[in-house]
Length: 303
Image (cartoon, rainbow, N blue to C red; front, side):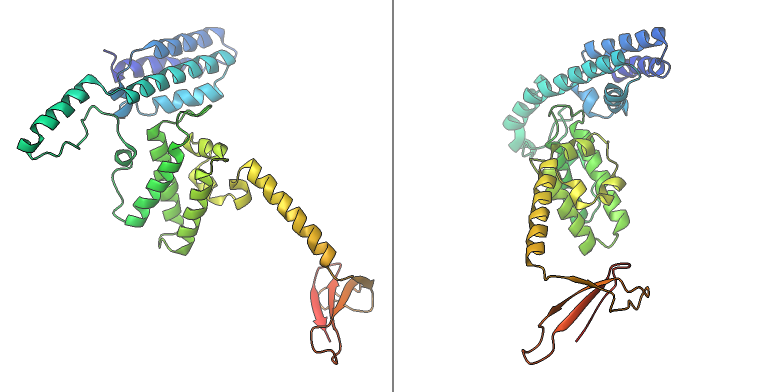
């Protein structure tokens, strides 16, 4: 049976060869051969789920996107797809030892005082387990769960290399960045949680989910993105159309403005201004004049 040590040994060869592969055919061939060997390994599900591979899966996903040559990227992508199939097949069909354990719990649960719900150590970890340990603060723990659930929607989608564990780690990192910025978990913290949650769950915004889950957008950058940058392309186009329509409506309803040099700006001293008048008080009172300086955009009014 293939062990984590076997996988890491071959991965080490691929990594070392990849570092010197650009312009070096021999190193490229060694890297490709190692990646093909990794793709063909019969790796138990437990090796993926217990964390013994460390950053190896993530590094190979990165190699599939940013490898030095096309051959390396193709071989790394093949490896990623092979590993995803192993995890997918194992998730859809429980291992024999897990089934036997469940049967044993069903028949002996009452005698042992066990409700049979505890997961076998050999089983695939759930999101809740991957989010352990908890922070001890209900709001923060709930936030991590919300983010993890949203990011998990990306797993298995096209061009997404993130695993369930990656999604959990990304959710933890994003929440930690939130907490580092707003340690009181007050209204700013909650507002940002609502904003991120809405955009990460948006069915029309798969690109944002994929980028966060795959680690292409760091938590700090994510927090600094403007609302329009968080939204999907479709939503940005919709908002642009709404703004354009609102601007056109505002222009149609705007009072006619005239240019004049009769007023002097108190801010920059220039006399190039525009103005318009409105009846803001009763009909027998003078109209109010609104003036805007064309030079510095200073605005004032007088009656």
